[in-house]
Image (cartoon, rainbow, N blue to C red; front, top):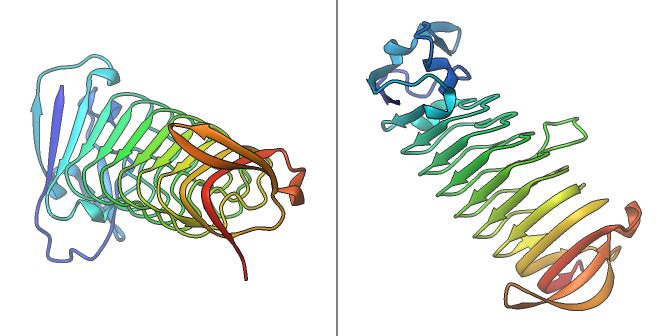
Length: 256
């Protein structure tokens, strides 16, 4: 079953749309679901032109396709998603994949902040860039992503995988400041550069295939290892927090 939601042009296009109801299982029973634009509750067909092809009995058999020039205004798409697939043909707004536990979200454009926030399973693929707090916990939380995988083919912002406790995050470009800060587990891979990676990590593994700028002095150098055809310097740490995590970097420079 394929459900295509094509966004209609809107006069007040700067107003974000709270769209947590857009998950595959919502379209199984034929129930009328709504979204919020500002303080107005609207039916889906007031925001989208809806096309349904085929039939499904389980959420695993449903694909939701979001299209249009303004998909980046949609917030919380895929929240608590547990099965099926969502394909976004453009960009997407904040909190996409919140608490996701299964299924796949594929974004062909850029993703705004908190992509995959506190997800526990499933797969998120972002073909563009991801903004700050990708695969992290929410402010004040102690654990971020706990399972599943997030793959970003562009760059990521600051606080990538903050508080990550499980799962795998891969960024094919560079990341911003504090990538993997407060890691409790899981695996983080940054193919490009980042700054102050894995600060205050407790468990887990962080790989930086580019340059780790502002390397913290509280990591202990162990030696070199071969990983994916690369020679990386292996550090353990952060010694400020039990020193049990593992940080692997190709190049590094310490804070001035």
